Structures are given as C-alpha cells and as structure tokens.
Length: 432
Ligand code: ARG
Image (cartoon, rainbow, N blue to C red; front, top):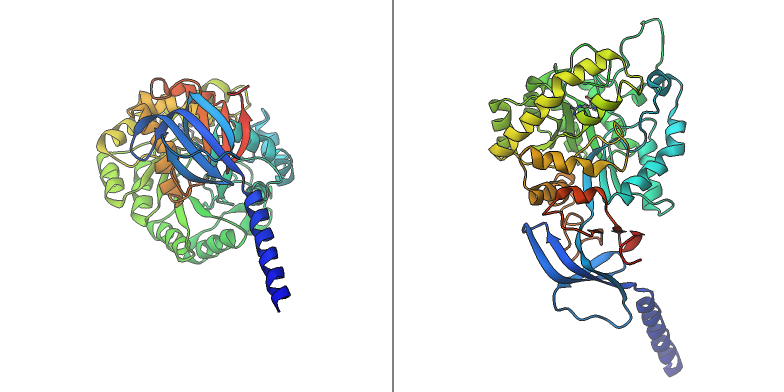
C-alpha cells in the first residue's frame, strides 16, 4: 500500500514538473504601451505572458528567470489590430469577368492563405470576414485555428445573403445563361421562409456571423447603388433568425432608407453606411449600432479599378458614394455614433488594411479613437471583448509594435514591425 502511495506521489510530482516545464513564459518590455481601454499611453511597461495568455501587465512585475525576454523598450506596443470587414479569400486579378466566370472557390482556396499571412504580417490579428465563396472562409478559419497556416483569428460569414437581383446576385446578363451553383451557396433568398432557411444553412456550415445586403452596392451590376433590396419584414427575419442561433447580423447598406431599415431590424453594425441623414444617425445612436465604414476604399477604386477591367457603370456608382461616405462618417463621429474599423480589404490588396487609419483621422477621429475603433470597439462588436482588443490580464497575447508612436502619426501603423498572436511571434523586425 505504501509503495502504491509513494508511486502515486512520485508520478504526481513528475506530471507537475512536466506541465510547468511546458508552460512557455514570455516577458515583453514595452517602451510605450497603448492602453486602449482607457485611451492612455503608458511608459515602461512589462507584459508577462504564459503560453497564449496575458498574465500580468505593469511597470513593476517580477520577471521569472526562465522567461524569454522580448525587448521592445524602444517601441510603442499595442494590442493586435482588428478589421471587422474583410474578404480575405480573394482580391481582383485584373480580369473582372474572368474572376467571376472562370474562377471557382477552389481557386480561392489555393491562394487564401497568402492573403491571410499578409493580413497577419500587417498587424491584424483578428478579422471578421464578411462574405466569400464555397465555404473557403470556414476552411481558412479552421486551418488557422489548427495552426496549419499563419493568419489572423477569423470570424466568418460564409455566404452573403441577398435578394434576387441584389448586390449579392449575379446581374446584367441574359436570363438564358444559367450560372447557378448549389442553391444555398449563392446566398440568394427571398421571403421569410427562404431567408430563415438561408440563415440556418450558413450557420450549419460554419458561419460565426450573418451578413446580408440591405441595399444595392457598387461592385455589382444592378442599376442602383443605395436602394433597399429587402423589405422590413425580410430584414427583421434575418436578424431574428440569426439571434435565435446566438449570432449577430451585419448589413451591407449604402442608401439612407436601407440603413434605417437595417438598424430597426437590429443589426449589430452597418457596413459602408455611405449616405447618412440625421434620422439615420439618431437611430444608430438609439440602437447602439456600430458604423463600420470602409473610408479608404474609394481611393483605390478610383485610381485602380479602370485598369483592373471594371465596367464604367461600376465606377460611376462609386462616384455617387465615395465622398458622400466620408462626409457621413464625419457627421456620425461628431454625433457620437459607435465607430469600428472595417476596410473591405479584398477590394484592395490584403495587408493594406491600416491605410484606412489616416482617413479616419482626417474625417474626425483622434489617432487614439481610430486605434480604439480597431481594438476595443471592434472586439465589442465581435462579441470578443473578453479575449481581444487590449493588453490586459486574461486576454490572448495578441500584441504588435511599431518604432514610432502612432498617437503622433497614425500612419506608422501601415508598417508594423512586430506581430505576436496567441503568444507566438510571427514577425519581428524590431530586435534584429
Ligand atoms: N463592397 C462595396 C460595394 O460593392 C464596396 C464599396 C466601396 N466604395 C466605398 N466608397 N466604400 O458596395
């Protein structure tokens, strides 16, 4: 009996020793640290990480002697950035019709990992991906979670839900041409019953969030850019069904009426939000709806999309919303609408996500507020407040660093030199 007991004791000790030997301990010495929760810049902070989690932060915390030390004492350290509007599985190749008709989701699947890596290297450790083809987003998210490939943490929407003839449908071609794949994989649905089924289908196959087209759009061939494309009842149905399954919904919406309808339906965020009037702004405030406006996008579309083979009717639609969207953004900021950070990367090259910060500052935010939009606010929108968005105890160790202080010049975020996600360093041009 005594032998059994001492055997148990010895094995318990061994298990304990090997467990603690497996604990990876990291200390980051941060010259400056952006406290996104309180909107402050702190000096000479130490971050203590065990495995993938932040365990302590402060200027006087003990340094375990078996910890790996990462010296960022000459840098500004901040939480990993969050982009709430990406299409990370693709970007235009320069052949508009070729991309639509000759590529399949398999093509997207082959290249998606490249874009995921570029996005992570740019300092974006989390993205909400709001629409892709063929469940490539689900496969990408899972491969990243399994650590098969590097990339940001992803919350994905699977299929964009749109009505017949909408921004999410394929328009402008003869009805005698039939391009339909598996029905639900088009995301085209109408009426309460079909919409409930589509939401369920998306969730069944892996959606973390539901995205639908409340209004027409730019990069599609229907006539309007901002007209509503669902009835109020249809929008209510989509949001209610998503909620039933514990998911939030977001709405693509450029036009004023569609924005108001989607807000009333209860979406968590308005994507684009191009043409806001006072009533729309008041409604967003009342409902606590986030504005997720891609206000760098116009720059790239107007300078590159003609060369990329996009038809004039699309470029003409962009002219109707591009500048108006920025003015709407300014008004929303002044009125105190909740602002998050979403770029629509995929319309422009992945990895360029941070170019939007400059525009957010130009159109009304302070650099600190722009950073908060891409960290604490984004985390709140995603329902991940406890996990990401700040360098605080208990959160995942998603940490980036830049040489200069982005509070002085927010554009320095376009060149992130250190990226850690979940305690793993993916990029370090700092301590070389
Ligand atoms: N995906 C959006 C659409 O096609 C892009 C809008 C880009 N334009 C802009 N000004 N944000 O509608």
